[in-house]
Length: 179
Image 1 (tube, rainbow, N blue to C red):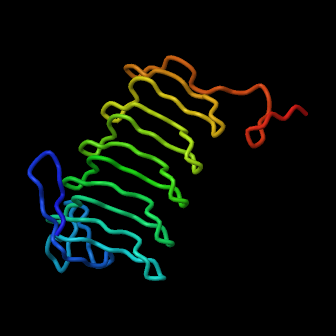
Image 2: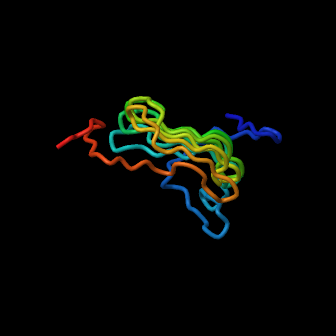
Image 3: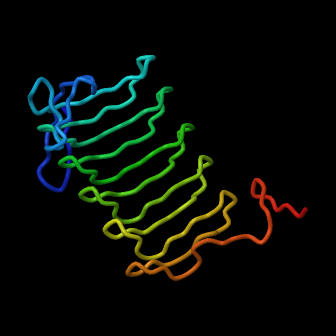
C-alpha cells in the first residue's frame, strides 16, 4: 500500500493493480470503474514489449497520489501527483535522455508558482511565474546558447518588456549567417 500525502489527512491507495484497459470511465462523474464498482488501486499500461508504460493511483474512482509514465526503453518521462482527480503538487517531465525537461507546481488542477523548462542538453530554456494559472511577474526564455530572447513582466493581464527578439540577421544552428 502507498500513502498519498497532501495537506489534509493522508489517504492510502490499495495494492490492487489492474490493466488500464479494464477500467471504464463514467464521463458524467469523472470516475473510473472496475467490475461496475468505483476503482481503488493502480491502473497499469504496458508497451508491446511488456515494459511498464504507465502507473496511476486511484481512490474511489478518482486519480489520487502518484502517476508515472515511462518511455518504451524504461526511462521515466512524467511524474505527477493527483488529489481528488486533479493535478496537485509537483509535476515533472524528462527528455528521453533522462535530462529534466520541465517542472511546475499545481494547486487544485491549476499551475501555480514557478514553471521551468530545459533543453535536452540541460540548459534552461524558459522560466515563467504563474499566479492561479496566469502569468504574473517576470517571465524569461533563452536560446540554447544562453542568449536571452524573452524578458518581460506580466501584471494584471498586461505585458511590459521584450516579448520576442527578432534578429535582423539569419541564424543557423545559433550561428550568424552573413550571406
